[in-house]
Amino acid sequence: MIPDFSRRRERLFRELKDRKLPNLLVTCPHNVTYLTGFTGEDGYLFANKDKVTILSDARYEEQLLQECPLDPVFIRDATITMIDATAKWLATQKLQNVCVESQTITLAQWEKLRGQIENIRLESCGGVIERLRERKDASEIEAIERAVSIAERSFVSVRAMLTGDMSEKTVADQLEYSIRKLGGTGSAFKSIVGVGSRAALPHGRPSAKRMDDDAFVLIDWGAKEDLYLSDMTRVIITGKPTSKLQKVYQTVLSAQEAAIRAIRPGILMSEVDAIARGIIEKAGFGKRFTHSLGHSFGLQIHESVRLAKGQERPLEADMVVTVEPGIYIPGILGVRIEDDVLVTKSGNRVLTSLPKQWDEIQR
Image 1 (tube, rainbow, N blue to C red):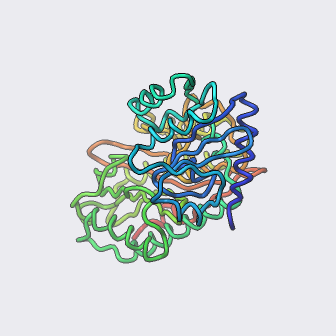
Image 2: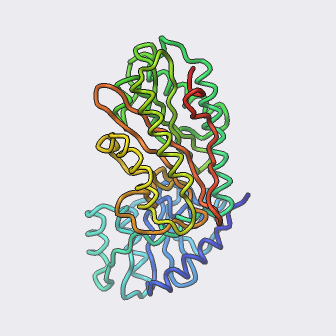
Image 3: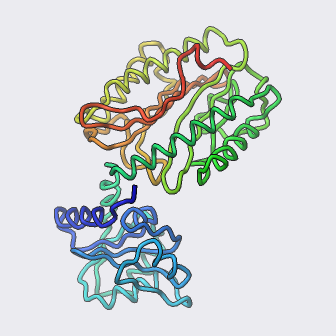
């Protein structure tokens, strides 16, 4: 399905009008891509009422024609920086103020921009497009589903080849190779592979520790298919598990399943987190659940929706979130189970399908 970029830009124009913002200088490359399809590494976009202008350089002229044949386009001289070129172009637009996505430029760039357009007031206006990106359109959901499928097939392939002498790093490398072999662009992020006690590191990086050094391994991975991502976590039992591991696993699974059942339009993000957290606390592991329950993703692996304490916003249809409760006992074990969930008009649809029941995760 081809993305409707013009519709996305129309949504932006309405948002600017609703927020009473005269314009927006888009500096986040993911936001430029979202609005236009342009995937070049060097490019800004200026939105003003009902039109947009891409600012880039000569290296991307042909790419711009192929990916987003928009008019007008401002191509900077190769002898000046992007900030200098942007200031030069803005100075020709007879503007009183410019709203800037300041979260993706440095303080030095901000100061340089402000210093070159002294008659134009700069205002920080972050989060405008990120809010638009929270609700996925049909083309985005389809792309995420493709990324999920590639990630799941890569996991099945690597799980089938697991041997005791394989290291965490080898497993991570095999996952990435399998993703590419199956047609993915690459990994959605650096894969996390933790054997035994190293699974207690929520963001632990793969080491030389071998699969047969303990009875289980935690794998957190995702695929990138074209521009969109997936994100999931599974535990594989590779030896004789302890009763403590089984108790922790069943607790995490119960928390995750309860949270997923609760997902629907209108429920507060904090409520979904509280459902999972309450089950883990009741089991006596509350202090060992050290992160939020989940996050949205799409073009980026962490986007603006968070299933967490203090997030007093309702979920909306077409949001896509991870649900990933975890329990981490330093020096002993760590368990996290993660699935990708689409909020639908009447409830939710789980996009991931890999087995996760206790009797299904034995190697």
